[in-house]
Image (cartoon, rainbow over all chains, first blue to last red; front, side, top):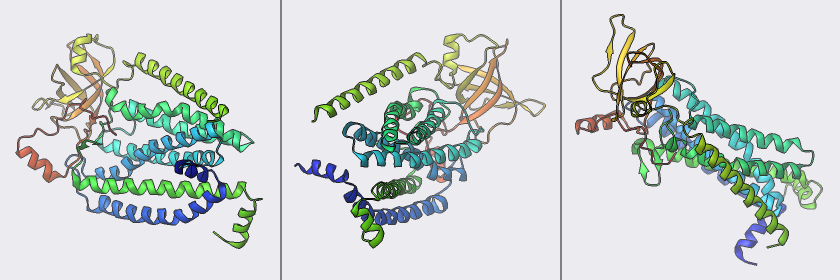
Length: 249
Length: 156
Protein backbone atom coordinates (compact mmCIF):
# COMPACT_ATOMS: atom_id res chain seq x y z
CA UNK A 1 0.00 0.00 0.00
CA UNK A 2 1.39 3.38 -0.93
CA UNK A 3 2.05 5.99 1.74
CA UNK A 4 -0.72 8.32 0.51
CA UNK A 5 -3.22 5.49 0.43
CA UNK A 6 -2.29 4.42 3.94
CA UNK A 7 -2.82 7.94 5.31
CA UNK A 8 -6.19 8.08 3.52
CA UNK A 9 -7.23 4.78 5.12
CA UNK A 10 -6.00 5.87 8.55
CA UNK A 11 -8.19 8.97 8.41
CA UNK A 12 -11.12 6.73 7.62
CA UNK A 13 -10.55 4.67 10.74
CA UNK A 14 -12.63 6.07 13.64
CA UNK A 15 -10.35 4.98 16.54
CA UNK A 16 -7.23 6.24 14.79
CA UNK A 17 -8.84 9.59 13.85
CA UNK A 18 -10.26 9.95 17.38
CA UNK A 19 -6.87 9.49 18.99
CA UNK A 20 -4.98 11.56 16.43
CA UNK A 21 -7.45 14.45 16.82
CA UNK A 22 -7.23 14.20 20.59
CA UNK A 23 -3.46 14.57 20.41
CA UNK A 24 -3.56 17.46 17.89
CA UNK A 25 -6.36 19.64 19.33
CA UNK A 26 -4.44 21.15 22.32
CA UNK A 27 -1.57 22.19 20.01
CA UNK A 28 -3.98 23.80 17.56
CA UNK A 29 -5.66 25.75 20.39
CA UNK A 30 -2.28 26.84 21.72
CA UNK A 31 -1.14 28.23 18.37
CA UNK A 32 -4.60 29.72 17.68
CA UNK A 33 -4.75 31.60 20.99
CA UNK A 34 -1.12 32.78 20.80
CA UNK A 35 -1.40 34.04 17.23
CA UNK A 36 -4.92 35.42 17.74
CA UNK A 37 -3.93 37.40 20.84
CA UNK A 38 -0.77 38.70 19.16
CA UNK A 39 -2.49 39.65 15.88
CA UNK A 40 -5.55 41.27 17.47
CA UNK A 41 -3.45 43.21 20.02
CA UNK A 42 -1.25 44.46 17.18
CA UNK A 43 -4.15 45.23 14.86
CA UNK A 44 -6.62 46.73 17.32
CA UNK A 45 -4.19 48.68 19.52
CA UNK A 46 -0.79 49.16 17.88
CA UNK A 47 -1.39 49.41 14.11
CA UNK A 48 -1.89 52.95 12.76
CA UNK A 49 -5.29 54.35 11.74
CA UNK A 50 -6.01 54.65 8.01
CA UNK A 51 -5.52 57.98 6.22
CA UNK A 52 -9.13 57.97 4.95
CA UNK A 53 -11.13 55.64 7.19
CA UNK A 54 -9.50 56.60 10.49
CA UNK A 55 -10.01 54.14 13.35
CA UNK A 56 -12.81 52.22 11.61
CA UNK A 57 -10.12 50.48 9.55
CA UNK A 58 -9.61 48.20 12.58
CA UNK A 59 -12.79 46.31 11.65
CA UNK A 60 -10.69 44.92 8.80
CA UNK A 61 -8.71 42.75 11.26
CA UNK A 62 -11.88 40.77 11.95
CA UNK A 63 -13.68 41.16 8.65
CA UNK A 64 -11.02 40.08 6.17
CA UNK A 65 -9.84 36.92 8.00
CA UNK A 66 -13.50 35.91 8.50
CA UNK A 67 -14.24 36.46 4.83
CA UNK A 68 -11.24 34.36 3.79
CA UNK A 69 -12.35 31.62 6.19
CA UNK A 70 -15.98 31.78 5.05
CA UNK A 71 -15.16 30.53 1.60
CA UNK A 72 -12.07 28.41 2.30
CA UNK A 73 -14.12 26.39 4.81
CA UNK A 74 -16.81 25.98 2.17
CA UNK A 75 -14.19 24.68 -0.25
CA UNK A 76 -12.92 22.17 2.34
CA UNK A 77 -16.48 21.14 3.20
CA UNK A 78 -17.08 20.40 -0.49
CA UNK A 79 -13.84 18.39 -0.73
CA UNK A 80 -14.81 16.33 2.34
CA UNK A 81 -18.28 15.96 0.82
CA UNK A 82 -16.81 14.78 -2.46
CA UNK A 83 -14.77 12.09 -0.69
CA UNK A 84 -17.87 11.12 1.29
CA UNK A 85 -19.94 10.70 -1.88
CA UNK A 86 -17.37 8.80 -3.92
CA UNK A 87 -15.74 6.57 -1.29
CA UNK A 88 -18.51 6.57 1.36
CA UNK A 89 -15.96 7.33 4.09
CA UNK A 90 -17.86 8.05 7.30
CA UNK A 91 -15.06 10.25 8.67
CA UNK A 92 -15.29 12.47 5.58
CA UNK A 93 -19.05 12.78 6.01
CA UNK A 94 -18.58 13.79 9.64
CA UNK A 95 -15.89 16.35 8.82
CA UNK A 96 -17.95 17.86 5.99
CA UNK A 97 -20.97 18.28 8.25
CA UNK A 98 -18.84 19.55 11.16
CA UNK A 99 -17.42 22.25 8.86
CA UNK A 100 -20.83 23.75 8.03
CA UNK A 101 -21.62 25.49 11.37
CA UNK A 102 -18.05 26.85 11.64
CA UNK A 103 -18.22 28.24 8.10
CA UNK A 104 -21.67 29.68 8.75
CA UNK A 105 -20.37 31.46 11.85
CA UNK A 106 -17.46 33.00 9.93
CA UNK A 107 -19.85 34.10 7.16
CA UNK A 108 -22.11 35.75 9.71
CA UNK A 109 -19.15 37.57 11.29
CA UNK A 110 -18.09 38.70 7.80
CA UNK A 111 -21.54 40.10 7.02
CA UNK A 112 -22.00 41.82 10.40
CA UNK A 113 -18.53 43.39 10.58
CA UNK A 114 -18.75 44.42 6.93
CA UNK A 115 -22.08 46.08 7.57
CA UNK A 116 -20.71 47.95 10.61
CA UNK A 117 -17.75 49.12 8.49
CA UNK A 118 -19.99 50.09 5.59
CA UNK A 119 -22.04 52.60 7.59
CA UNK A 120 -19.18 55.03 8.39
CA UNK A 121 -17.27 54.34 5.18
CA UNK A 122 -19.83 54.03 2.38
CA UNK A 123 -22.74 55.69 4.15
CA UNK A 124 -24.94 52.57 4.24
CA UNK A 125 -25.20 49.29 6.16
CA UNK A 126 -26.18 47.24 3.15
CA UNK A 127 -26.45 47.37 -0.62
CA UNK A 128 -27.40 44.60 -3.04
CA UNK A 129 -24.15 44.63 -4.98
CA UNK A 130 -22.62 41.41 -6.35
CA UNK A 131 -20.07 40.88 -3.55
CA UNK A 132 -22.42 41.45 -0.64
CA UNK A 133 -25.24 39.46 -2.21
CA UNK A 134 -23.05 36.45 -3.08
CA UNK A 135 -21.66 36.41 0.47
CA UNK A 136 -25.25 36.38 1.80
CA UNK A 137 -26.02 33.48 -0.57
CA UNK A 138 -23.03 31.68 0.99
CA UNK A 139 -24.66 31.99 4.43
CA UNK A 140 -27.89 30.54 3.03
CA UNK A 141 -25.94 27.67 1.44
CA UNK A 142 -24.37 26.81 4.80
CA UNK A 143 -27.78 26.96 6.49
CA UNK A 144 -29.22 24.80 3.70
CA UNK A 145 -26.49 22.18 4.14
CA UNK A 146 -27.08 22.12 7.92
CA UNK A 147 -30.85 21.96 7.49
CA UNK A 148 -30.77 19.20 4.89
CA UNK A 149 -28.36 17.17 7.02
CA UNK A 150 -30.62 17.28 10.04
CA UNK A 151 -33.81 16.68 8.03
CA UNK A 152 -32.98 12.97 7.60
CA UNK A 153 -33.50 10.43 10.36
CA UNK A 154 -30.58 8.41 9.07
CA UNK A 155 -27.43 10.51 9.62
CA UNK A 156 -25.47 8.92 6.76
CA UNK A 157 -28.21 9.63 4.21
CA UNK A 158 -28.54 13.18 5.50
CA UNK A 159 -24.80 13.76 5.29
CA UNK A 160 -24.64 12.54 1.68
CA UNK A 161 -27.63 14.60 0.56
CA UNK A 162 -26.12 17.66 2.23
CA UNK A 163 -22.72 16.90 0.69
CA UNK A 164 -24.32 16.90 -2.76
CA UNK A 165 -25.94 20.28 -2.00
CA UNK A 166 -22.57 21.63 -0.88
CA UNK A 167 -21.01 20.50 -4.18
CA UNK A 168 -23.75 22.20 -6.22
CA UNK A 169 -23.27 25.37 -4.15
CA UNK A 170 -19.59 25.36 -5.08
CA UNK A 171 -20.41 27.55 -8.11
CA UNK A 172 -20.96 30.43 -5.69
CA UNK A 173 -17.31 30.46 -4.57
CA UNK A 174 -15.76 31.85 -7.80
CA UNK A 175 -18.71 34.26 -7.99
CA UNK A 176 -17.87 35.68 -4.55
CA UNK A 177 -14.18 35.84 -5.38
CA UNK A 178 -14.46 37.46 -8.82
CA UNK A 179 -17.62 39.53 -8.21
CA UNK A 180 -15.51 42.63 -7.61
CA UNK A 181 -13.55 42.03 -10.83
CA UNK A 182 -16.30 40.99 -13.24
CA UNK A 183 -18.84 43.62 -12.26
CA UNK A 184 -19.07 47.15 -10.89
CA UNK A 185 -19.64 46.82 -7.16
CA UNK A 186 -19.69 49.14 -4.18
CA UNK A 187 -17.29 46.74 -2.46
CA UNK A 188 -13.66 47.48 -3.33
CA UNK A 189 -11.49 45.00 -5.25
CA UNK A 190 -9.11 42.76 -3.33
CA UNK A 191 -6.14 44.28 -1.53
CA UNK A 192 -4.05 41.16 -0.97
CA UNK A 193 -2.94 38.82 -3.72
CA UNK A 194 -0.09 36.53 -4.67
CA UNK A 195 1.56 39.42 -6.51
CA UNK A 196 1.55 41.80 -3.55
CA UNK A 197 -0.74 43.94 -1.48
CA UNK A 198 -2.09 47.47 -1.47
CA UNK A 199 -2.27 47.44 2.32
CA UNK A 200 0.66 49.14 4.04
CA UNK A 201 2.96 46.59 5.80
CA UNK A 202 2.21 48.14 9.22
CA UNK A 203 -1.42 47.02 8.73
CA UNK A 204 -0.82 43.92 6.61
CA UNK A 205 1.24 41.97 9.16
CA UNK A 206 -1.32 41.94 11.98
CA UNK A 207 -3.97 41.08 9.38
CA UNK A 208 -2.04 38.03 8.18
CA UNK A 209 -1.38 36.88 11.77
CA UNK A 210 -5.09 37.02 12.65
CA UNK A 211 -5.86 35.19 9.40
CA UNK A 212 -3.44 32.42 10.35
CA UNK A 213 -4.94 32.20 13.85
CA UNK A 214 -8.39 31.76 12.26
CA UNK A 215 -7.15 28.74 10.32
CA UNK A 216 -5.91 27.09 13.53
CA UNK A 217 -9.25 27.91 15.16
CA UNK A 218 -11.03 26.08 12.36
CA UNK A 219 -8.73 23.07 12.72
CA UNK A 220 -9.27 22.83 16.47
CA UNK A 221 -13.02 23.38 16.25
CA UNK A 222 -13.44 20.92 13.37
CA UNK A 223 -11.50 18.15 15.12
CA UNK A 224 -13.35 18.71 18.42
CA UNK A 225 -16.70 18.38 16.67
CA UNK A 226 -15.47 15.33 14.78
CA UNK A 227 -14.30 13.66 17.99
CA UNK A 228 -17.66 14.16 19.70
CA UNK A 229 -19.47 12.72 16.72
CA UNK A 230 -17.09 9.73 16.44
CA UNK A 231 -17.52 8.92 20.12
CA UNK A 232 -21.31 9.20 19.88
CA UNK A 233 -21.55 6.90 16.88
CA UNK A 234 -19.11 4.31 18.20
CA UNK A 235 -20.38 4.30 21.77
CA UNK A 236 -20.98 0.53 21.59
CA UNK A 237 -17.50 -0.21 20.27
CA UNK A 238 -14.84 -1.43 22.62
CA UNK A 239 -12.35 1.40 21.97
CA UNK A 240 -14.95 4.06 22.65
CA UNK A 241 -16.13 2.43 25.85
CA UNK A 242 -12.57 1.94 27.00
CA UNK A 243 -11.89 5.63 26.45
CA UNK A 244 -15.02 6.74 28.32
CA UNK A 245 -14.58 4.42 31.29
CA UNK A 246 -10.83 4.41 31.54
CA UNK A 247 -10.11 7.89 30.29
CA UNK A 248 -7.41 6.40 28.06
CA UNK A 249 -6.65 8.78 25.22
CA UNK B 1 -10.64 1.96 -8.62
CA UNK B 2 -13.75 -0.04 -7.80
CA UNK B 3 -16.26 0.21 -10.72
CA UNK B 4 -19.02 1.37 -8.35
CA UNK B 5 -16.83 4.22 -7.08
CA UNK B 6 -15.80 5.07 -10.61
CA UNK B 7 -19.48 5.39 -11.54
CA UNK B 8 -20.17 7.66 -8.57
CA UNK B 9 -17.12 9.76 -9.40
CA UNK B 10 -18.25 10.14 -13.01
CA UNK B 11 -21.81 11.00 -11.97
CA UNK B 12 -20.55 13.72 -9.63
CA UNK B 13 -18.24 15.20 -12.25
CA UNK B 14 -21.13 15.33 -14.75
CA UNK B 15 -23.35 17.10 -12.18
CA UNK B 16 -20.62 19.60 -11.29
CA UNK B 17 -19.81 20.42 -14.91
CA UNK B 18 -23.53 20.75 -15.69
CA UNK B 19 -24.21 23.07 -12.77
CA UNK B 20 -21.09 25.07 -13.57
CA UNK B 21 -22.07 25.53 -17.21
CA UNK B 22 -25.67 26.43 -16.36
CA UNK B 23 -24.49 29.05 -13.85
CA UNK B 24 -21.94 30.47 -16.27
CA UNK B 25 -24.59 30.88 -18.98
CA UNK B 26 -27.07 32.45 -16.53
CA UNK B 27 -24.50 34.89 -15.21
CA UNK B 28 -23.36 35.78 -18.72
CA UNK B 29 -26.90 36.55 -19.86
CA UNK B 30 -27.54 38.61 -16.70
CA UNK B 31 -24.23 40.51 -16.93
CA UNK B 32 -25.90 43.88 -17.48
CA UNK B 33 -28.10 43.40 -14.42
CA UNK B 34 -25.16 42.40 -12.25
CA UNK B 35 -23.62 45.86 -12.57
CA UNK B 36 -24.19 47.89 -9.44
CA UNK B 37 -23.59 51.19 -11.22
CA UNK B 38 -22.81 52.66 -14.64
CA UNK B 39 -20.03 55.12 -15.36
CA UNK B 40 -20.40 58.51 -17.11
CA UNK B 41 -18.83 56.92 -20.19
CA UNK B 42 -21.58 54.24 -20.24
CA UNK B 43 -24.26 56.91 -19.83
CA UNK B 44 -22.98 58.77 -22.89
CA UNK B 45 -22.71 55.56 -24.92
CA UNK B 46 -26.09 54.11 -23.95
CA UNK B 47 -28.06 57.35 -24.13
CA UNK B 48 -30.09 56.75 -20.95
CA UNK B 49 -33.26 58.88 -21.21
CA UNK B 50 -34.13 61.49 -18.54
CA UNK B 51 -36.29 60.14 -15.72
CA UNK B 52 -35.07 56.55 -15.83
CA UNK B 53 -33.48 55.73 -12.44
CA UNK B 54 -30.00 54.26 -12.30
CA UNK B 55 -26.83 54.36 -10.21
CA UNK B 56 -23.98 56.52 -11.41
CA UNK B 57 -20.44 55.71 -10.29
CA UNK B 58 -17.16 57.53 -10.78
CA UNK B 59 -14.75 59.96 -9.19
CA UNK B 60 -15.68 63.38 -7.85
CA UNK B 61 -13.90 65.80 -10.17
CA UNK B 62 -11.43 67.85 -8.08
CA UNK B 63 -12.57 71.47 -7.81
CA UNK B 64 -16.12 70.74 -8.91
CA UNK B 65 -17.89 70.61 -5.53
CA UNK B 66 -20.09 73.65 -4.85
CA UNK B 67 -22.78 74.26 -2.25
CA UNK B 68 -25.97 76.14 -3.07
CA UNK B 69 -27.08 79.25 -1.13
CA UNK B 70 -29.51 77.19 0.98
CA UNK B 71 -26.51 75.27 2.33
CA UNK B 72 -28.10 71.92 1.57
CA UNK B 73 -27.88 71.26 -2.13
CA UNK B 74 -24.45 70.11 -3.25
CA UNK B 75 -23.39 70.08 -6.87
CA UNK B 76 -20.39 68.21 -8.19
CA UNK B 77 -19.15 66.51 -11.33
CA UNK B 78 -18.66 62.75 -11.58
CA UNK B 79 -16.02 61.66 -14.05
CA UNK B 80 -14.50 58.41 -15.28
CA UNK B 81 -12.05 59.87 -17.76
CA UNK B 82 -14.42 59.15 -20.66
CA UNK B 83 -17.27 61.45 -19.68
CA UNK B 84 -18.43 63.96 -17.07
CA UNK B 85 -21.88 64.24 -15.52
CA UNK B 86 -23.08 67.05 -13.24
CA UNK B 87 -24.79 65.80 -10.10
CA UNK B 88 -27.14 67.69 -7.77
CA UNK B 89 -27.92 66.28 -4.32
CA UNK B 90 -29.59 67.61 -1.19
CA UNK B 91 -28.96 65.19 1.64
CA UNK B 92 -26.32 64.00 4.01
CA UNK B 93 -23.05 63.11 2.32
CA UNK B 94 -20.96 60.21 3.71
CA UNK B 95 -17.89 61.15 5.76
CA UNK B 96 -15.55 59.88 3.08
CA UNK B 97 -17.05 62.16 0.42
CA UNK B 98 -14.35 64.47 -0.95
CA UNK B 99 -12.86 65.63 -4.21
CA UNK B 100 -11.07 62.84 -6.01
CA UNK B 101 -13.07 60.21 -4.08
CA UNK B 102 -15.03 57.41 -5.78
CA UNK B 103 -18.80 57.83 -5.27
CA UNK B 104 -21.96 56.02 -6.31
CA UNK B 105 -25.08 58.17 -6.66
CA UNK B 106 -28.64 56.87 -7.13
CA UNK B 107 -31.08 58.99 -9.08
CA UNK B 108 -32.02 59.99 -12.63
CA UNK B 109 -31.10 62.56 -15.26
CA UNK B 110 -33.40 65.59 -15.49
CA UNK B 111 -34.32 67.53 -18.64
CA UNK B 112 -31.27 69.79 -18.24
CA UNK B 113 -29.06 66.64 -18.23
CA UNK B 114 -28.15 67.10 -14.57
CA UNK B 115 -28.18 63.91 -12.49
CA UNK B 116 -30.62 64.45 -9.62
CA UNK B 117 -29.34 62.15 -6.87
CA UNK B 118 -31.51 60.76 -4.06
CA UNK B 119 -28.62 58.96 -2.34
CA UNK B 120 -24.85 59.32 -2.48
CA UNK B 121 -22.50 56.58 -1.22
CA UNK B 122 -18.72 56.79 -0.98
CA UNK B 123 -16.73 54.02 -2.64
CA UNK B 124 -13.62 52.96 -0.80
CA UNK B 125 -10.70 51.68 -2.84
CA UNK B 126 -8.34 48.81 -1.99
CA UNK B 127 -5.57 51.03 -0.58
CA UNK B 128 -4.94 51.04 3.16
CA UNK B 129 -2.17 53.15 4.67
CA UNK B 130 -1.30 55.28 7.70
CA UNK B 131 -1.80 59.09 7.37
CA UNK B 132 1.98 59.75 7.31
CA UNK B 133 2.45 57.45 4.32
CA UNK B 134 -0.45 59.11 2.51
CA UNK B 135 1.11 62.53 3.16
CA UNK B 136 4.50 61.35 1.92
CA UNK B 137 2.91 59.98 -1.23
CA UNK B 138 0.97 63.19 -1.80
CA UNK B 139 4.17 65.22 -1.46
CA UNK B 140 5.78 63.11 -4.15
CA UNK B 141 2.87 63.99 -6.39
CA UNK B 142 0.84 60.80 -6.22
CA UNK B 143 -2.82 61.74 -6.58
CA UNK B 144 -4.83 60.39 -3.62
CA UNK B 145 -7.41 58.96 -3.46
CA UNK B 146 -7.92 58.37 -7.13
CA UNK B 147 -7.36 54.78 -8.18
CA UNK B 148 -9.72 53.88 -11.03
CA UNK B 149 -12.74 51.73 -10.09
CA UNK B 150 -12.01 48.75 -12.27
CA UNK B 151 -8.37 48.24 -11.32
CA UNK B 152 -9.01 44.94 -9.54
CA UNK B 153 -6.26 42.38 -9.31
CA UNK B 154 -8.60 39.46 -8.90
CA UNK B 155 -8.06 38.74 -5.24
CA UNK B 156 -10.22 39.21 -2.16
